[in-house]
Image 1 (cartoon, one colour):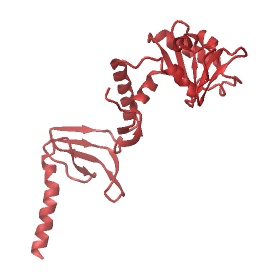
Image 2 (image 1 turned 120 degrees about the horizontal axis):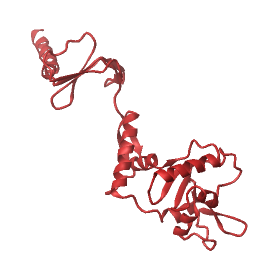
Image 3 (image 1 turned 30 degrees about the vertical axis):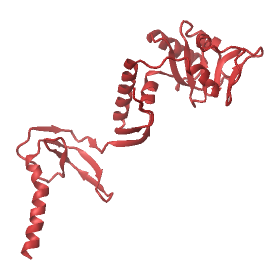
Image 4 (image 1 turned 180 degrees about the vertical axis):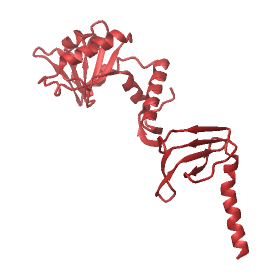
Amino acid sequence: MTKPFLRLFAAAALLLSPAAHADGLVENVNGVTLDSKGAVLRFNAILFGRDGKIVALLQRGDKRPKKLDWKTDMGGKTLVPGMIDGHGHVMGLGQQLLALDLVATTSLDDALGKIRSYGESNPAKWVLGRGWNQERWQLGRFPTAAELDRAVSDRPVWLERIDGHAGWANSRALALAGITAATKDPSGGRIERDAKGQPTGVLVDGAMALLTKAIPAPTPRERNAAFLAAQERLLSLGITASADMGTSVE
């Protein structure tokens, strides 16, 4: 009986010994995690080693090391493990966050006002955005390039519909993309036209590529800004890692 007891004691000592050399302590947290069997495990503090790895999770009554290099009191805040997004588009999220957001607009005039304000405060060569919904505006039709020109006419504008299946362009954008009455509808897409066959400003599904190919690729600085914006949003939601489906060498 003595040898099994000694082996058990030695194993326990090995598990507990790193705590004596812990580098730091995050104290006073409402911690919730899962154990190896998937059961909920609650804790009040975390011990970190000098390599930055977690040494132990502690309950309120557990002893804390006397010697620590640092200690942080979290004031009872809730702490959970970081979530991992198994299928994400990080750069797309960042670009979306930096673009004009029209999701909350309730009318065409409301949207045009936001587009105008965004254009005045953003000197980018293209005004890009998304989120408009003519059904929510109770417009009864698609918006037009002429209406969009009232908000921004000095630069090209391209705004994707809330579902991503249509885009709204101003006259400058249509001209830069070379979209005219002579442009044929592509397979799987449609150019909205007036009674005379002139493009009215909205491109549906496959026709969107006729215009998006004219939009310049983001610069390195713009890509960095998009990445940082996405990172901040993901971290704010507790997402600490993402399997990005759109990562490229750039």
